Image 1 (cartoon, rainbow, N blue to C red):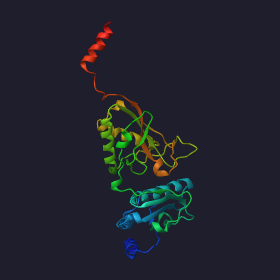
Image 2 (image 1 turned 180 degrees about the vertical axis):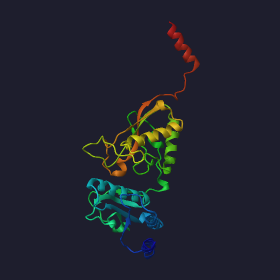
Image 3 (image 1 turned 120 degrees about the horizontal axis):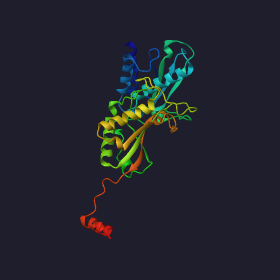
Image 4 (image 1 turned 90 degrees about the vertical axis):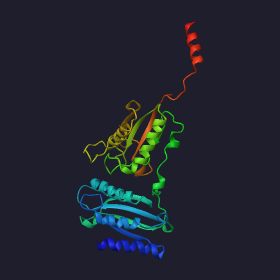
Length: 292
């Protein structure tokens, strides 16, 4: 609790003084875990209490100790950084990175390092990835993407979020999903396939999926696409209009983990179900012509 109090004092000192200062601190994890314990979440909460978040940048670096295999630790460090990033998306995020194991087995190396500073202090580095803040006002609007649908067109379903390494859709996704249902009901002749993608795959084996920790199956991209399919099915979208598939790491976008890890739909058919019927007289003329 003392550590949390110190963190709160530091954050509010930075705000009240109004000076250009860089603050660096660590969040610590239990062995083999990437979810924050409650006492560490309190430190995040104190940072989120700051007003004017658009004035600050946050850098996030994940680490592990050196117990275990290097590749496993690299992935664990990435998950730690990613989990912390999800909690800080109201700030501008600069290159959230998992850096793997440090050189000892000390518990203090099971951590995420956060560097927090005013934007005026930011020094651009080659290869850095900047992720703009996400707020409740930035929920994606899908309507424009369905304005003139074309066969083969792919629409990324931004705003559909899953719990880390699981196929369970988060409650924050409800508004985007409801938008999608409304648009699919509006465009009743549209057929589509739902495609799940993962980040951080093996470029040498792009078809290899990752583990879904809810089930233990190595099918995360497939399972996430299926979760969206089942949601739409439950909301009344006909199974005849849609199918789903997992794409694993076959199609990374090269813009960072957040963009590679996605669910999108591809339009596969357009039936003119809303086309108004011909007038009775025209229909009769056609029938008469057919008799000749």
